[in-house]
Amino acid sequence: MSLLAVEDLRVHFVARDLYNRTRVATALNGVSFTLDSGEILGLVGESGAGKSLTTLALLGLLRPPARIAGGSARFAGQELLGLDERALNRIRGTDLTMVVQSPRTSLDPLMRIGDQLTRMQRRRGPVGAAAARQRALEMLEEVGIPDAERRLLAWPHQLSGGMAQRVLMALALVNRPKLLIADEPTTGLDVTVQAQVLDTLRDLVRRRNMGAMMITHDLGVIAHYCDRVAVMFAGTIVEQGPVKQVFRNPAHPYTRALLASTPRRIASTGYRLTGGTPPNLFALPPGCVYQDRCAQRAERCGTLPPGMEVAPGHSAWCHFAERPAA
Image (cartoon, rainbow, N blue to C red; front, side):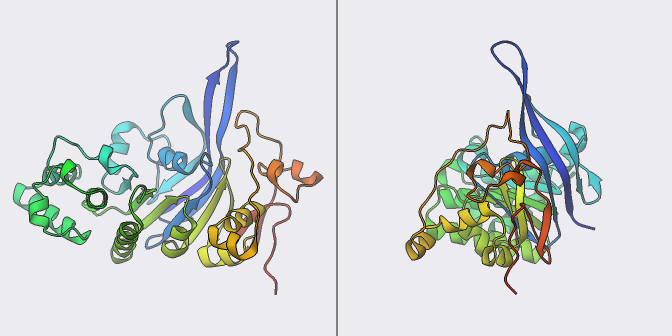
């Protein structure tokens, strides 16, 4: 059984126009994927594709006008969608945790680092002060923070960006979760610190046999740190599979365009970037959501594309999905 199994997840935004008519934006349109323990799944796609929205739906953090319109999300055998707030609070911060992209606004500026780590441990149950402090110290050392004893007494404003991000990782991992979600966890950090933070995150996932989801725009992060990748466009997963397989033989036109738009590919192939805007979520085209930007567009694209397995564990949702050459 998969640690996390998401099937046909749909999220709508319900709004009213100037004439008080109801309008519905289809923000997530049938998202499905699985994640196993010890595995890192990367969600990649342009801004507005639905990556972060997917995780907010799983964590029960959607707020009006967003609402879940259908689907299933089973975590460790338990259905997440539809749980009440009390039941979700028993899971969030304990078995299911998240590292966000803005440590400066996520850490409590009025609490010392050690106190925040202690408070997080109390979410799981009663814990003695000495045991909580020892656990907090161990976690700071485990995420690579030097002089951890002194950092327990530090205030958030006294930390560098990389140090604050590591503290967020410690907070997310202190209760030994089963699943960690990392949403652009290295935004705003310099390249060297990014690599250090991601190396630490990957090593901890492997060592603890956790599951992890990595949300990013950076294809290099996906290539170096993820086992599998799901490519999203306009609230839909258009391709997913093992990272090496998808990067070596991209089957969907959107995936090929993403990979071709990296600076190295542009320099080596002379690829010309082609612009385009995301489709209107209030009026998605019938059939393939990528058709208006696709060079291969044909009449059949007006019908829903089939899911085609182009290789073992590697699928794409396109009428023209390309199989790797034999």
